[in-house]
Length: 110
Image (cartoon, rainbow, N blue to C red; front, side, top):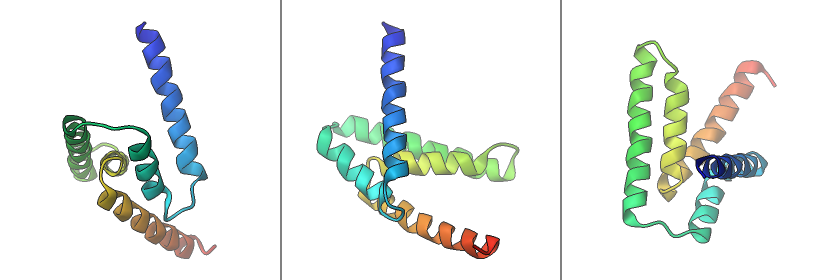
């Protein structure tokens, strides 16, 4: 039973990742937010727990920037988690994605 639940969660994560990759840069997080909130209804407790978990990952990521550890990855994952429940956070991630892409293009010279 637990194996079945785990497999189902893994498939959902794969599907979500594929949707995020396929979406247009600068719109992908807002589109994911709208798609997720249109298809399922989560209660206030689920939303609060998700936002707190994402915020916790962001805090751990900030600590990881000065301490040994994958700080940037934790910040990104925390932001993505918060963006699943907050349109403002999704918008902020879309804007940041555009700025990061521009900066990387300027740095690499593409």
